[in-house]
Length: 217
Image 1 (cartoon, one colour):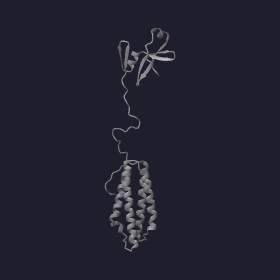
Image 2 (cartoon, rainbow, N blue to C red):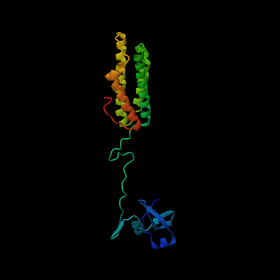
Image 3 (cartoon, rainbow, N blue to C red):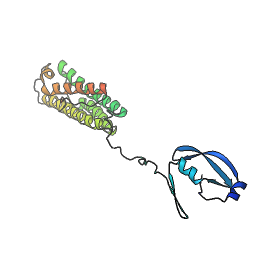
Image 4 (tube, rainbow, N blue to C red):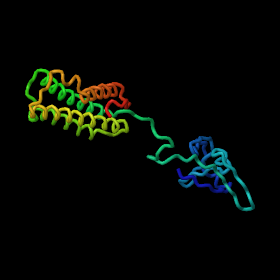
């Protein structure tokens, strides 16, 4: 409502319709007399100053109305003074990360089963597992949105690279006709590192928070 502050002659005021209304100034309500005249609304200066917690000053024919400034609010989208707390893993990343871990576990299980039972180990046979793990890793990268996601993705990438090295290692040994003991993986440091990293990643997935214990480095 456009409030016009005018000194209205007494005769005009007597002819105008007056009623008491609630005037809200800067969020503060107050009862003031509002005069309706010629389709416009007028209020008394002193009443307005009182409602708005302002002040009036008279100097000759000059009237000064001083109103307190409204508290400024930060613009929408302005950054807060302190950074938000770490939100942990995003929902999409956690889902994609679990699928990535599952793909690597299946890849390693297939390799371990072949070694234990003396089955032929060929690259074309393991390529399917490698491809599934690589696809899962790409989907995980797309789902990254928080700092925890980004940090965990580095560990998932490291786990994938180590599994690739382990797989290539035994494919090369088979091609060179090197004897592979049934319990070869149990004593393989790289395999042990992959298992330790998998346990660490599973623990993070359970809590939903990133915590690097060095197992995947």
